[in-house]
Length: 437
Image (cartoon, rainbow, N blue to C red):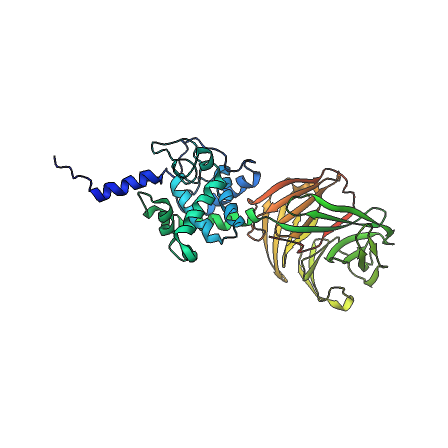
């Protein structure tokens, strides 16, 4: 039998590959037979599992239906490494395309015949076993080599598969480019989750005796940075609904059939809350719920949703225009806004519902949750997909929606409590847009 001999050149190339410790093959993308190590030392999160559910419905390749909390946590750590280096999203797409081929985005802790480990199947020449199983270290090692091989950021425009192959020196180079589209979907989905909310959520409240409160909550950690800070003075009327317009302006309706609307100008929130005598604007605002998105004021009375346009920071009655009946049947228990033209609320039965409001008799309804949200009697959002729910026992819970405008509930995850008690206000309202990503 004739058996062709390996050429000296080919043998030399193979020897180099083995010597420098790069991958020569791939694990099946959906393999479950390999032992794995945690990618995030803090462990997988509820949000990781929620994102996996979302991705399983949107990916189109080998990982569709195979994503789980472990894989998402690994993708999250790779993307976090990219973000911390202030590199563009394309760097994460390249790294994840490589990891999808090499390990199916699993931190493989079981050495194969070639001695490779981790997300990128790195051999011993890359580093110690502990280093290769450190997802952050491995991602940075991959990025270091990519940047070194492509000076002047040439990797930004080079084909993704080509860059992966240059770094990995694999036996099957064509496999990387085939994963590029799904790698992009993963990055698009996980990047906002990694970056997370930033800034300070400013929350105003009214106590049962009519005093105002102010509380600042760090968006990233969920911890209070100040407050509750109380006012010595009282509103002087029984409030029914409240919306925060900006850092020092509130709109509050008075309980009663006249529907009196007041503007409250806050003068200080340091040490004590101080505000000017409420300015009476006019009557007819019989809304049970109010919320403001930075341009539009939304009010619900008897299930009817109305939208107004606020044209100045401290409006008089003439500056509240465009009284539009959006529709009826909005039987919400709580109301907040998540972005311009978007409202979010809960029902007495526990549904969490998002609405895109476009005009009179023109809106889209998205039911994010069917049950369990009935426990909240107030719902607040300072923006960027950050939600706070207050329970009747005075506890305040924090949630994060990776994409608050996708009409999907799978990417809404609990982030724990801000406080287990102490939130005893009869009204609560967050300043819109104070939190970003």
